[in-house]
Length: 371
Image (cartoon, rainbow, N blue to C red; front, side, top):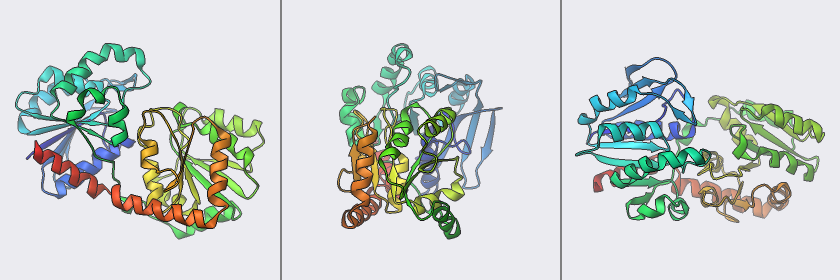
């Protein structure tokens, strides 16, 4: 069984989908299933043999338009490569990869779609793309969704429920190493206060403005740390300054992979305040759970976020765009030690039961074999 993973980018380009794709490729090859990659690259086209024994072919991207990598070379490369594989595993949304498959054809190939999210932001362009999306869904042999909830609530997946299987995202928690000196430094810099930690690209759907406003409701013994960079950095800094919250809220910037585990270790609660369905899963939640941290997240219609974090079991799920209910959730968790320990223990337990990357890949292999 030979598999081709088809996606927009691949590490060292880092993103949620890219990390999932990397973990699948690495573990499949470790298990003896030859799995190669075709993706685009922010630069020239090249192929490389990875030390672990697989190939990554990167086609030149001529830029990103409407969240799509424009890489016409992908069509020719796919045409030359596809004959060597039994299964083509496509990570969506990716209109360019979908177009390439349409032009090349899928005859005698098993097509697996990994449905990370509906297309949300580009609503008008989706009308043009939807016939192509319908084509690939009709021709797919299997559709992997990251949560059962997404299958039930995505209007696109509902049409093809008989093809869908829920396989939650899993991570390699060993990558999140802890530097105990850095943990101590983070705690000391924040004067031993309770730490609410959040992480993500500073962009529209993450809802960080509501987390910042929630800090108004918290006492001086709690601090909010927000990691990440993005186009809303200056706007969020202005919001902090305008509300005189510089002692309660800190934007710590982009956190390196090397240091990320130390921030999870140092915090008391993790918060995912996202406000739109573009947040389909929230990998950061399971990273926090791997450290046994209670999670406060939001109930977003059609998203799997509140399936990942179980309300009153691993944390709290609250309505989005509401600073006060975020603050109330933090208080309820931190003011009752028994509640805190219960949620923390359950967070770690749920991670171990569902969200290890080995479990994810085992389920994918099982699905491949059924094809």
